[in-house]
Image (cartoon, rainbow, N blue to C red):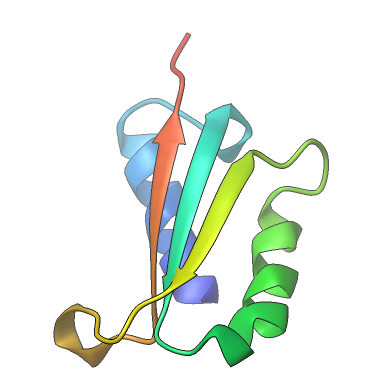
Length: 76
């Protein structure tokens, strides 16, 4: 999960945004049993006022990944 968050952070930075500008996140997990561990890492990236979030379990992700995240940020 940490690498997924770092990738998202880098993509946001390339667009001139920061994690503090994220307003919505969707997390896709292959195993919802991983939620607590994912939540801990996720929370470390949003220590104050975390964005709205949905977390769903899916049967399969690209390249057999365990987690995928979709971040929406407001620039401005």
